[in-house]
Image (cartoon, rainbow, N blue to C red; front, side):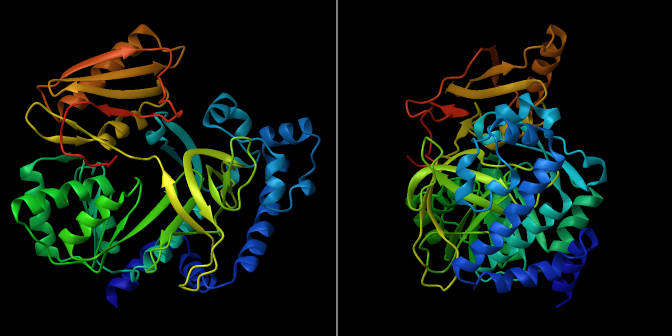
Length: 450
């Protein structure tokens, strides 16, 4: 009980409405889809009014299209608007600043690593805490309750500080990195899991799959958690099977988009991911931007609460399969049957350690003002190549500083890596138009599936 109270207190310290919102969301999940849609469209009309009144870009776009705010009243009406890309937002960054931005409580964030394009955005405090509440509700499909113990097998973990220790303590979590995986590191993770016996594990699919393969090879076991929660990457069937066998529990998968505010979670029926409706609108559209009620297409996101930087029909870069089926669990939301793409890989160091693609992604989050696009390529363990599309006005001195910073960052993982940096005008996509931001042609254990 104390853990739960401490957990909720920590969240209410940031947003006093957090717990009432969380309780509302728990009730809301059982409403029929028509009611959820009605709530969503009411919020949409409010966001459209705000965007047209406060955001110069949307005011101009509506004027050019000869549209009034009242012309966008339903989800279907969104088809009247063009698809919004990261390139458009970057090009018109100043126009996306709401007139009342100074009065809003928000955070500056960076994301977009999986697309090879570091992307800055603003996230309102309200949207941030609503996203957390939706996350806890989604984890609840697997039995999670706020305050339950959890180990996160995740990305880069900053050095231990008082702030980080306090953050993990009040949330009853422990964060471990799966960015750099060798025998010593995996042995340490297994030791921690055996000692802490967490109720839940939340993990990047490729990271926990890599660990599961190593555990099977080494004959290692851990106390089975109640469930494993995965997100960020595509979870392939062979990965699910291996991890569930190694850890002795079920996986509950999820899909989310931090900048676009999308979230969806798997329930015990494992029939798809329940698409949340309270924070954003998820559209699946064809190549012409026409909405699909079922089938595969581009995933678009429309903000319902993030006034700091409203997205209307934001191109996520992901493709998904939407369904209008009703889940046997009784929840009314639509189901996302699958998400294509988001398969990550590992690079291999000369010492035989595997470094996750996310390790490099996090570097480029910090230099988004200097690098427009990037790609990591490895043909042999001794060498790693970075193809960079720099910002047009990046000076020679700035390039030299960037190169020095990148080499220093890479050599933290392996001082024996030969780092090659190439400046290019464009980065090739695959035959289907997909972007791979890490290409590893060195034979090594498959962690992302094919």
